[in-house]
Image (spheres, rainbow, N blue to C red):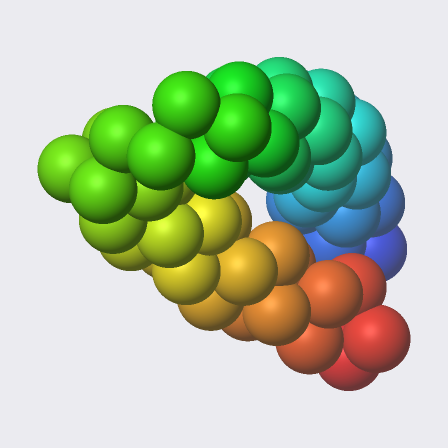
Length: 66
């Protein structure tokens, strides 16, 4: 039973990682657009979101390796 639960958790993590990578790509494109027009508020917002995504990705990757 433990193996089944671990397998399901791993699949959930892998799915979230895939979605998170898409979100990061989108946010990087948004950051690029903000940098082109020199919108400092938007740049800072993007950086904050990217930092949250980075932390979540790191956490998920650690869970998978266990």
